[in-house]
Length: 434
Image (cartoon, rainbow, N blue to C red; front, side, top):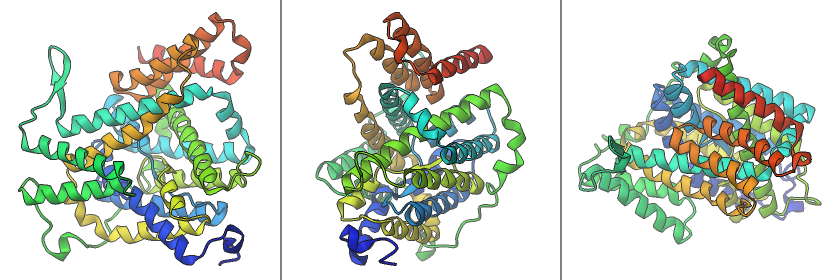
């Protein structure tokens, strides 16, 4: 085992790798409860999604650890689950079963693009500024959903949105959760999002806003059945061949493109695993990520992707794939704690959504705002996501404006041919919607 994971070469050991795996798990354990909450909005069975989330995370992390040998942990991605629930299912009116088929299709396409090497070509074709804009826009969208779920932001006939009732006990609980999460992360507590959820839930129970678990059976229970979601992606695969679903699948592809590439580079750089500014075993890592999406769609969850929280484990000393294997074990163990879903209410998950939004929006600082031809498509990508309540619409508008502003500026040669193809696809997307 030591030889396979190259412990001696990487200067690590079992104890360090175990602690690193546990640290990463705690840093991202919130997804076990937030993902069922988000996908539950789409009408999916929350217990089944809880189990699917744990299985997808465990299998994906195991593949990454064993095949690519990176200390990178995977789970259903934030942003992608919001797109799945709020844009595809609620916004477009597409059944969640068909949406899962779209996730499956994107996973299969990922595998093909990865094995042929085309995936890297597409990633390189999309301008860095637009990649950053997509990440930041999704961050704003996720935070908006968090504020909305908490009742901090509500609808208003005169102004569209307004501040909610800050005298409401449930709203105040969510505000408390945001504050405690901010405090924990500010002072450098790894897993601050997860601990913030725990503290918020406990306070909610103490003040009588959340029903407490009933004995041991309210904490530990049997592994939930995945029957409501398992295999639905295959049963409805024939429904994805529409223009609308093409855009949905493309969006799944784009967002996971950026998430995975950015996370792998960030984690590998922090761990000192980059060689000549290149990522060793990149194709194996991308394959593990792609295969995890197929597994996740099969069991019943949105796109599975690499998590930047893996840097928490690297910070704790993790250097090998054994870190990811340990985290996978914790996700499997978590399967027995599904009864806790009853205490993880919207007020408890809202702070996590807001904090993740803050973290994702940090990409704003790296966008080249001084170049107007870049600033316009980047800004429209970012702002149109929360304003239209659609990640796909934000991406579409930004990708349409990019070649227009670049051509007008005389920078035609800098536009990759793939971007022209995307321009046509997204124009047709709006024509189709109208």
